[in-house]
Image 1 (cartoon, rainbow over the protein chains, first blue to last red):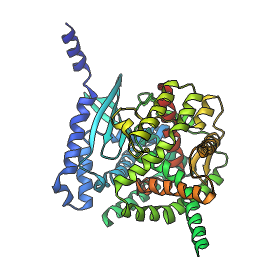
Image 2 (image 1 turned 90 degrees about the horizontal axis):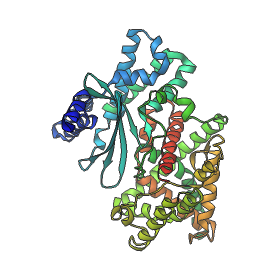
Image 3 (image 1 turned 135 degrees about the horizontal axis):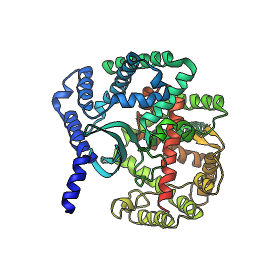
Image 4 (image 1 turned 180 degrees about the vertical axis):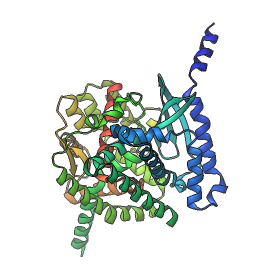
Length: 194
Length: 265
């Protein structure tokens, strides 16, 4: 009876860690693939972002990072912002593939689930240090999708949120879009240069 | 000649010390000196409230923002022009393992201060933990060069300082302060750092003259920077307003550290 009960619970809501694990394994495998290194920097980051997309909800990230202003944007503006913000993350983080070392190991320390939200706590361990990384996820059609990454207690979304809200306060939404475009162009240039 | 050399050393040392705090925050912000693993969750990431109105929660007042921004700019330039180049050279001379040991050594020397602060905050288990770490690492870790307490005995490092003690005693943050010596802080935490600094001079052997003290502090700063090369610039390149990015990062990180201490009372 107990076994049956737990089965039902699993069917109702899949386990976030069990979904995150194969995803992170795939990311690590792609990073470790020697074929990746032979490609151009642009192609490397394109390939990585397409893997990352499988479990990252960039629309949810965009909605949260803009805050209440999101509702006032037209559908076209929302789509444009999502595209720009995704590019920002692609070039800022995914572009840093060189930093990756094979010796890193991911430990799953804990998970918390409440309604359709989940927090999976991991520890990225290598020889010198261990970095706590939490993945914050939302349930979408039986799939847990990541919408925030918290490294050492610092949430990516909340950090950009404060920066974006100051820009919007000063220069409005158009100012924010302009700054995003400039930043993406700058990071893209640096990526292809190095 | 000798005097001139001494002066040059002193100058370099003082400048290097200035940025130690700056780097410390950059380092902990981006990658980290490890293991404040116990986490209570000051901010509940599962709750939407923490996203919808995070600003009021995370941010304290920043009434002297123009001064802070100026200080941030100064710290930034000195980091880029002096501390990072010096630390880069240093990292090429000394292998990573040795630099890690030196980092451990300095960290170990801070344990007595941490343990007193735990005591003052009524965290008795943590007091024992920090003292235990100090004893084990000083004896079996060859004066703290290794961390057998963490590696073999699984006693994780504990976060404690006098700024936190003041906060437990009910002293408010005051306001955000970018200190020329220490980088992001608040009025209360900065005062705490000063007190902790003076307290450590009572038992560290290099406080006979300013030159020695400063040299040791500079070595500590260079060593720490060498273990986190590039991280500061990475964060800067990803941010739109790096002043705001670091201020926000400082408060998010601190709320996590303070909270993890509360959970282990």
